[in-house]
Length: 313
Image (tube, rainbow, N blue to C red; front, side):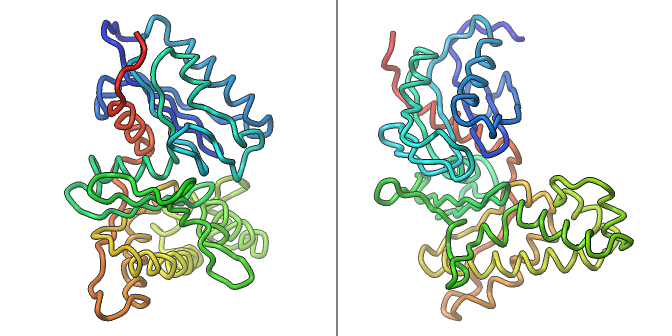
Protein backbone atom coordinates (compact mmCIF):
# COMPACT_ATOMS: atom_id res chain seq x y z
CA UNK A 1 0.00 0.00 0.00
CA UNK A 2 1.44 3.41 -0.97
CA UNK A 3 2.33 5.88 1.75
CA UNK A 4 -0.37 8.56 1.84
CA UNK A 5 0.04 11.77 3.82
CA UNK A 6 -3.01 13.69 2.61
CA UNK A 7 -6.68 12.73 3.11
CA UNK A 8 -8.05 10.77 0.17
CA UNK A 9 -11.34 10.54 -1.65
CA UNK A 10 -13.33 7.32 -1.25
CA UNK A 11 -15.51 5.88 -4.00
CA UNK A 12 -17.96 3.01 -3.48
CA UNK A 13 -19.99 1.04 -5.98
CA UNK A 14 -22.73 -1.14 -4.48
CA UNK A 15 -24.26 -3.26 -7.22
CA UNK A 16 -26.49 -6.29 -7.37
CA UNK A 17 -23.56 -8.70 -7.53
CA UNK A 18 -20.39 -6.72 -6.87
CA UNK A 19 -18.80 -4.19 -4.57
CA UNK A 20 -16.03 -1.87 -5.64
CA UNK A 21 -14.04 0.39 -3.31
CA UNK A 22 -11.47 2.85 -4.59
CA UNK A 23 -9.32 5.47 -2.92
CA UNK A 24 -7.90 8.34 -4.92
CA UNK A 25 -6.36 11.76 -4.82
CA UNK A 26 -8.69 12.83 -7.66
CA UNK A 27 -11.33 11.19 -9.87
CA UNK A 28 -8.72 9.97 -12.36
CA UNK A 29 -5.92 9.25 -9.89
CA UNK A 30 -6.92 5.99 -8.19
CA UNK A 31 -4.34 4.76 -5.69
CA UNK A 32 -6.09 1.78 -4.10
CA UNK A 33 -8.92 -0.52 -5.09
CA UNK A 34 -10.81 -3.57 -3.92
CA UNK A 35 -13.39 -5.59 -5.85
CA UNK A 36 -15.63 -8.01 -3.96
CA UNK A 37 -18.64 -10.19 -4.66
CA UNK A 38 -21.65 -8.79 -2.80
CA UNK A 39 -23.20 -11.14 -0.25
CA UNK A 40 -26.63 -10.80 -1.90
CA UNK A 41 -28.33 -13.72 -0.17
CA UNK A 42 -27.54 -12.30 3.29
CA UNK A 43 -28.95 -8.88 2.52
CA UNK A 44 -27.91 -5.32 3.25
CA UNK A 45 -26.44 -5.90 6.75
CA UNK A 46 -23.94 -8.41 5.36
CA UNK A 47 -22.95 -6.03 2.56
CA UNK A 48 -22.45 -3.19 5.05
CA UNK A 49 -20.21 -5.51 7.08
CA UNK A 50 -18.23 -6.34 3.93
CA UNK A 51 -17.66 -2.63 3.34
CA UNK A 52 -16.61 -2.08 6.96
CA UNK A 53 -14.10 -4.95 6.84
CA UNK A 54 -12.71 -3.79 3.49
CA UNK A 55 -12.14 -0.25 4.78
CA UNK A 56 -10.39 -1.59 7.87
CA UNK A 57 -7.76 -3.10 5.58
CA UNK A 58 -6.68 0.39 4.50
CA UNK A 59 -4.97 1.13 7.79
CA UNK A 60 -4.01 4.72 8.53
CA UNK A 61 -5.87 6.39 5.67
CA UNK A 62 -7.75 9.58 6.45
CA UNK A 63 -10.74 10.40 4.28
CA UNK A 64 -11.56 13.79 2.78
CA UNK A 65 -15.00 12.75 1.47
CA UNK A 66 -16.80 9.79 -0.07
CA UNK A 67 -19.13 9.24 -3.00
CA UNK A 68 -21.39 6.18 -3.26
CA UNK A 69 -23.05 4.72 -6.33
CA UNK A 70 -25.95 2.46 -5.31
CA UNK A 71 -27.75 0.02 -7.60
CA UNK A 72 -31.29 1.29 -7.13
CA UNK A 73 -33.36 4.39 -6.40
CA UNK A 74 -31.95 6.71 -3.73
CA UNK A 75 -32.89 10.02 -2.14
CA UNK A 76 -29.72 11.79 -3.23
CA UNK A 77 -30.44 14.79 -1.00
CA UNK A 78 -30.60 12.86 2.26
CA UNK A 79 -28.49 9.83 1.39
CA UNK A 80 -31.37 7.44 2.11
CA UNK A 81 -31.72 4.26 0.07
CA UNK A 82 -35.26 3.99 -1.28
CA UNK A 83 -35.02 0.31 -2.18
CA UNK A 84 -33.03 -2.32 -4.00
CA UNK A 85 -34.64 -4.38 -6.75
CA UNK A 86 -32.17 -7.22 -6.13
CA UNK A 87 -31.06 -7.30 -2.47
CA UNK A 88 -33.24 -7.28 0.65
CA UNK A 89 -32.72 -5.00 3.62
CA UNK A 90 -31.81 -1.68 1.99
CA UNK A 91 -35.23 -0.02 2.11
CA UNK A 92 -35.13 3.34 3.95
CA UNK A 93 -31.57 2.84 5.24
CA UNK A 94 -29.75 6.18 5.55
CA UNK A 95 -26.48 4.99 4.10
CA UNK A 96 -24.94 8.45 4.14
CA UNK A 97 -25.21 8.65 7.94
CA UNK A 98 -23.94 5.10 8.34
CA UNK A 99 -20.82 5.72 6.23
CA UNK A 100 -20.15 9.20 7.67
CA UNK A 101 -20.02 7.68 11.14
CA UNK A 102 -17.64 5.02 9.87
CA UNK A 103 -15.11 7.23 8.05
CA UNK A 104 -15.61 10.58 9.83
CA UNK A 105 -15.96 12.49 6.57
CA UNK A 106 -18.81 13.87 4.43
CA UNK A 107 -20.61 11.41 2.15
CA UNK A 108 -22.91 11.75 -0.85
CA UNK A 109 -25.06 8.90 -2.18
CA UNK A 110 -26.27 8.60 -5.78
CA UNK A 111 -27.77 6.03 -8.08
CA UNK A 112 -24.95 4.01 -9.66
CA UNK A 113 -26.03 4.58 -13.27
CA UNK A 114 -26.16 8.34 -12.60
CA UNK A 115 -22.54 8.27 -11.45
CA UNK A 116 -21.45 6.13 -14.38
CA UNK A 117 -23.19 8.58 -16.70
CA UNK A 118 -21.44 11.49 -14.98
CA UNK A 119 -18.05 9.80 -15.28
CA UNK A 120 -18.52 9.01 -18.97
CA UNK A 121 -19.70 12.56 -19.65
CA UNK A 122 -16.79 14.19 -17.81
CA UNK A 123 -13.95 11.76 -18.54
CA UNK A 124 -15.07 9.12 -21.01
CA UNK A 125 -17.08 8.45 -24.17
CA UNK A 126 -19.36 11.47 -23.69
CA UNK A 127 -16.59 14.00 -23.11
CA UNK A 128 -17.35 17.41 -24.63
CA UNK A 129 -20.84 16.31 -25.75
CA UNK A 130 -24.16 17.52 -24.29
CA UNK A 131 -26.62 16.10 -23.30
CA UNK A 132 -25.24 12.62 -22.59
CA UNK A 133 -27.47 9.61 -22.00
CA UNK A 134 -25.86 6.52 -20.52
CA UNK A 135 -27.35 3.07 -20.15
CA UNK A 136 -25.77 0.05 -18.53
CA UNK A 137 -26.83 -3.54 -19.12
CA UNK A 138 -25.55 -5.81 -16.38
CA UNK A 139 -27.42 -7.74 -13.72
CA UNK A 140 -30.10 -5.12 -14.36
CA UNK A 141 -30.49 -2.17 -16.72
CA UNK A 142 -30.03 1.40 -15.57
CA UNK A 143 -29.78 4.81 -17.11
CA UNK A 144 -28.45 8.27 -16.42
CA UNK A 145 -28.94 11.64 -18.11
CA UNK A 146 -26.28 14.35 -17.91
CA UNK A 147 -27.24 17.88 -18.95
CA UNK A 148 -24.64 20.67 -18.82
CA UNK A 149 -22.28 18.28 -16.97
CA UNK A 150 -24.82 17.75 -14.18
CA UNK A 151 -27.02 14.78 -13.29
CA UNK A 152 -30.66 15.24 -14.18
CA UNK A 153 -32.72 13.94 -11.27
CA UNK A 154 -36.32 15.00 -11.69
CA UNK A 155 -38.66 14.86 -8.71
CA UNK A 156 -37.52 12.69 -5.78
CA UNK A 157 -36.67 9.86 -5.89
CA UNK A 158 -36.27 10.49 -9.61
CA UNK A 159 -33.70 8.60 -11.59
CA UNK A 160 -33.55 7.83 -15.28
CA UNK A 161 -34.96 4.35 -14.60
CA UNK A 162 -34.49 3.31 -18.20
CA UNK A 163 -34.48 -0.39 -17.36
CA UNK A 164 -38.04 -0.20 -16.03
CA UNK A 165 -39.41 1.35 -19.20
CA UNK A 166 -42.15 -0.96 -20.47
CA UNK A 167 -41.75 -2.45 -23.91
CA UNK A 168 -45.00 -4.42 -23.73
CA UNK A 169 -48.41 -3.56 -22.33
CA UNK A 170 -48.31 -6.67 -20.16
CA UNK A 171 -45.49 -5.13 -18.14
CA UNK A 172 -42.37 -6.59 -19.74
CA UNK A 173 -39.54 -4.06 -19.50
CA UNK A 174 -36.17 -3.21 -21.02
CA UNK A 175 -34.59 -5.10 -18.13
CA UNK A 176 -36.67 -8.19 -18.90
CA UNK A 177 -35.28 -8.28 -22.43
CA UNK A 178 -31.90 -6.54 -22.41
CA UNK A 179 -30.19 -7.11 -19.05
CA UNK A 180 -27.16 -9.35 -18.85
CA UNK A 181 -29.25 -11.83 -16.90
CA UNK A 182 -31.90 -11.84 -19.65
CA UNK A 183 -29.23 -12.54 -22.26
CA UNK A 184 -27.74 -15.25 -20.03
CA UNK A 185 -31.16 -16.88 -19.96
CA UNK A 186 -31.51 -16.77 -23.77
CA UNK A 187 -28.13 -18.40 -24.24
CA UNK A 188 -28.86 -21.01 -21.56
CA UNK A 189 -32.15 -21.95 -23.19
CA UNK A 190 -30.54 -22.31 -26.64
CA UNK A 191 -27.75 -24.47 -25.23
CA UNK A 192 -30.24 -26.68 -23.38
CA UNK A 193 -32.40 -27.05 -26.50
CA UNK A 194 -29.42 -27.83 -28.77
CA UNK A 195 -26.63 -29.26 -26.61
CA UNK A 196 -24.57 -30.25 -29.66
CA UNK A 197 -24.73 -26.83 -31.31
CA UNK A 198 -21.66 -24.67 -31.88
CA UNK A 199 -22.84 -22.15 -29.28
CA UNK A 200 -23.30 -24.90 -26.70
CA UNK A 201 -19.77 -26.12 -27.40
CA UNK A 202 -18.39 -22.61 -26.89
CA UNK A 203 -20.26 -22.14 -23.62
CA UNK A 204 -19.47 -25.65 -22.39
CA UNK A 205 -20.82 -26.66 -19.00
CA UNK A 206 -20.71 -23.13 -17.59
CA UNK A 207 -24.23 -22.08 -16.64
CA UNK A 208 -23.35 -18.73 -15.09
CA UNK A 209 -22.91 -15.36 -16.84
CA UNK A 210 -23.27 -16.99 -20.26
CA UNK A 211 -23.32 -13.58 -21.98
CA UNK A 212 -19.54 -13.46 -21.60
CA UNK A 213 -19.35 -16.07 -24.37
CA UNK A 214 -21.09 -13.89 -26.95
CA UNK A 215 -17.88 -12.12 -28.02
CA UNK A 216 -15.91 -15.34 -28.70
CA UNK A 217 -18.98 -16.84 -30.41
CA UNK A 218 -19.30 -13.78 -32.64
CA UNK A 219 -15.57 -13.96 -33.42
CA UNK A 220 -16.11 -17.35 -35.09
CA UNK A 221 -19.25 -16.18 -36.88
CA UNK A 222 -21.76 -18.12 -34.79
CA UNK A 223 -25.27 -17.50 -36.12
CA UNK A 224 -27.08 -18.00 -32.83
CA UNK A 225 -24.87 -15.40 -31.14
CA UNK A 226 -25.50 -12.96 -33.99
CA UNK A 227 -29.25 -13.50 -33.63
CA UNK A 228 -29.15 -12.86 -29.87
CA UNK A 229 -27.18 -9.65 -30.36
CA UNK A 230 -29.52 -8.45 -33.13
CA UNK A 231 -32.66 -9.16 -31.08
CA UNK A 232 -31.24 -7.53 -27.97
CA UNK A 233 -29.98 -4.51 -29.91
CA UNK A 234 -33.33 -4.11 -31.62
CA UNK A 235 -35.21 -4.04 -28.32
CA UNK A 236 -32.65 -1.70 -26.79
CA UNK A 237 -32.77 0.67 -29.76
CA UNK A 238 -36.58 0.80 -29.63
CA UNK A 239 -36.42 1.77 -25.95
CA UNK A 240 -33.68 4.31 -26.63
CA UNK A 241 -35.86 5.94 -29.30
CA UNK A 242 -38.11 7.14 -26.45
CA UNK A 243 -35.06 8.73 -24.82
CA UNK A 244 -34.23 10.47 -28.10
CA UNK A 245 -37.75 11.82 -28.55
CA UNK A 246 -37.91 13.12 -24.97
CA UNK A 247 -34.39 14.38 -24.25
CA UNK A 248 -32.47 14.61 -27.57
CA UNK A 249 -29.06 13.55 -26.28
CA UNK A 250 -26.05 14.30 -28.43
CA UNK A 251 -24.62 10.88 -27.60
CA UNK A 252 -25.87 7.61 -26.17
CA UNK A 253 -23.23 5.65 -24.26
CA UNK A 254 -23.60 1.89 -23.87
CA UNK A 255 -22.04 0.51 -20.69
CA UNK A 256 -22.30 -2.40 -18.28
CA UNK A 257 -21.17 -5.98 -18.70
CA UNK A 258 -23.17 -6.55 -21.89
CA UNK A 259 -21.30 -3.72 -23.62
CA UNK A 260 -18.21 -5.95 -23.48
CA UNK A 261 -19.73 -7.67 -26.52
CA UNK A 262 -18.18 -4.65 -28.18
CA UNK A 263 -18.55 -3.16 -31.61
CA UNK A 264 -21.08 -5.75 -32.76
CA UNK A 265 -23.56 -4.53 -30.17
CA UNK A 266 -22.83 -0.84 -30.78
CA UNK A 267 -23.24 -1.05 -34.56
CA UNK A 268 -26.45 -3.07 -34.21
CA UNK A 269 -27.99 -0.51 -31.83
CA UNK A 270 -26.83 2.35 -34.06
CA UNK A 271 -28.41 0.65 -37.09
CA UNK A 272 -31.75 -0.06 -35.39
CA UNK A 273 -32.17 3.29 -33.64
CA UNK A 274 -32.99 5.45 -36.73
CA UNK A 275 -35.81 3.05 -37.63
CA UNK A 276 -37.73 4.21 -34.55
CA UNK A 277 -36.88 7.94 -34.53
CA UNK A 278 -38.97 10.49 -36.39
CA UNK A 279 -37.40 11.85 -39.55
CA UNK A 280 -37.17 15.40 -38.20
CA UNK A 281 -34.57 14.21 -35.67
CA UNK A 282 -32.38 12.41 -38.21
CA UNK A 283 -29.60 11.37 -38.06
CA UNK A 284 -30.08 11.17 -34.29
CA UNK A 285 -27.46 10.85 -31.57
CA UNK A 286 -24.11 9.17 -31.82
CA UNK A 287 -23.96 5.72 -30.22
CA UNK A 288 -20.69 4.94 -28.43
CA UNK A 289 -19.34 2.22 -26.20
CA UNK A 290 -18.44 3.27 -22.67
CA UNK A 291 -14.76 4.16 -22.33
CA UNK A 292 -14.21 3.66 -18.60
CA UNK A 293 -15.26 0.03 -18.23
CA UNK A 294 -15.67 -1.12 -14.64
CA UNK A 295 -14.21 2.16 -13.41
CA UNK A 296 -17.23 4.18 -14.55
CA UNK A 297 -19.13 4.12 -11.24
CA UNK A 298 -16.01 4.44 -9.04
CA UNK A 299 -14.72 7.41 -11.06
CA UNK A 300 -18.15 9.04 -10.87
CA UNK A 301 -18.19 8.39 -7.12
CA UNK A 302 -14.78 10.03 -6.71
CA UNK A 303 -15.97 13.01 -8.77
CA UNK A 304 -19.00 13.32 -6.51
CA UNK A 305 -16.80 13.10 -3.42
CA UNK A 306 -14.48 15.80 -4.77
CA UNK A 307 -17.44 18.16 -5.06
CA UNK A 308 -18.27 17.92 -1.35
CA UNK A 309 -17.19 20.56 1.13
CA UNK A 310 -15.38 19.30 4.24
CA UNK A 311 -17.74 19.43 7.23
CA UNK A 312 -15.70 17.56 9.81
CA UNK A 313 -12.44 18.49 11.38
